[in-house]
Image 1 (tube, helix red, strand yellow):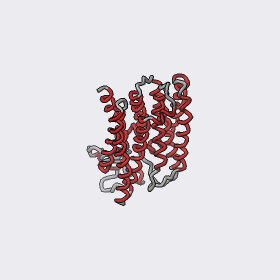
Image 2 (image 1 turned 180 degrees about the vertical axis):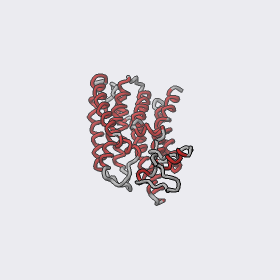
Image 3 (image 1 turned 120 degrees about the horizontal axis):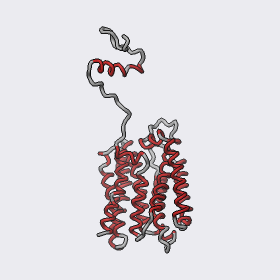
Image 4 (image 1 turned 90 degrees about the horizontal axis):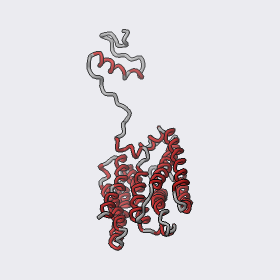
Length: 320
């Protein structure tokens, strides 16, 4: 027949398997019935896109920069927030593009965020170049001179992180603890340093010894490590390994929560920041206990939410 459908009495015999999927659609259309649903490429839920676009980490950094400014009684101009957001986005996108290039040829499937970056490499590479140039321009023209005294240490931390990322084991049965520790410290230092440069009377030593920086650095290390520990536990069938991974996260979170309560009791000025850290620790603790109920993509988003919700606690405590 001219329309490509077989005559009555003939079986549906597509000439090739590539065309086989079109015959049910055409036959259903001829019979006046709606065509059957065709499975489309898996669509990602809207709440996952901040993670896919690497916007989650910049949002967390900007939110806690605001908390540092409040804890240290500082007014930060808009370039501080924009510069930090751009720097964090450039680092995170570069790290994911590096992971994609290192995973080339690997039989293991890419995670959703890495697959998204692989498919849109041209967009992300162009975005990294534009964001880097914009960040440099803001630093040179808008940021105080004190930032140059801290950029060297920040650059060393970032270089160390990427160095560990390139040499760390990619085996699925290992958790990159050292890389996570350095990543958490680097993230915390960059966030706190952006506020600290506006404290003219304090040097770098006061920053790294401040209770706000130390507690936030521990929180960041635990937040980053949580994802790897959850993935590691999910891949294992050994109940001892699952229990060990849970305890590896539960015990430090409990200790951080206790330390936050103690600091809040003895230092009224730092109390709102301590309450925010305590809330983040408690939320991560609850997520860790209930992790079996969520997919890994959902857990990644919840881990970020656990660091954003405490800012509401910070505001209510600071204004209370």
